[in-house]
Image 1 (spheres, rainbow, N blue to C red):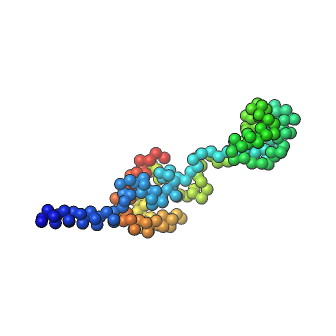
Image 2: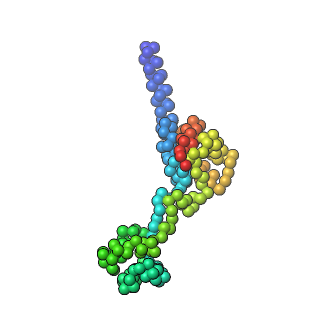
Image 3: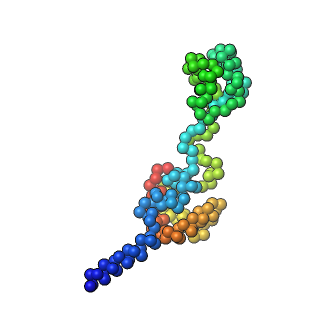
Length: 196
């Protein structure tokens, strides 16, 4: 009978604990995302940055055509490219296809490096901050005690800045999932070990 009561008590304790415990506490990386922290601070707290260069190709100015002639492309070939004037291409392959359609594959192969050099422009670079996220701090690699205190101070209203309201917006999720102080400490430790 005592063994039965002890077993029942153990099951009751676990039964009460499981629904209220944070189901994400064991993995702070998952918790960081489940709390939607990554939507402002970027994946792994590295900031909301571009992950690749974005190139655009276009023959938008007549001076580009003059420059191509100076670089050695025959005037007759350059004139065939005039229909591409002011057309924009976000994909290099499509830009090359458009050139081929006007001057043929052989001449495209011969002159494409010159054309790309003159007509290609990178309009954002890998590592650039995404507009609108310039004020959100990058957390990766910061000291865990600093990160922990920032989270706690903002959520408790001890610290306010322009973005504090956004962070306090996750409070209902924190409360409904019984996110504990230890969870915040584990997130801070996780972020402190991420290379910036």
